Image (cartoon, rainbow, N blue to C red; front, side):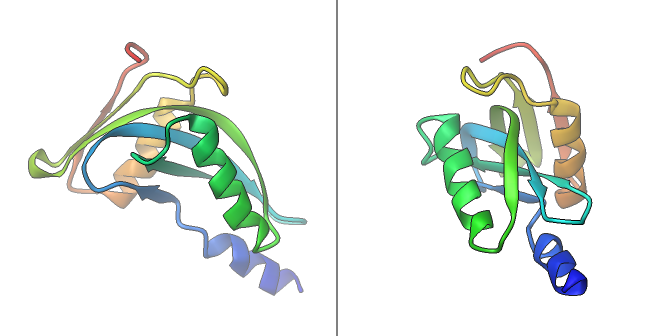
Length: 122
């Protein structure tokens, strides 16, 4: 059972964001029983509120037997034509995500991008 459980967490993508534009994102800590947690980034332009992103993510994860908590949020500016992503801002409801953690996750997913972050801005 432990091997099956580990694979559920390993199948969760570290990063799922829209391919272009400016949109909200959340940093989510995903857990499963008896396994180390991992943090994932979710950012989409359809979300009016950070809570929308978190709720949909939580529902998807729950179907795989995983629990999660929101560590905070912010905004992403994704400019694929310039190969740039900028991480900034905060979530009114969840507080500011650790943009340094988010940036590391994005760098792993987009190794040929310039990825920057700032605590300023909303």
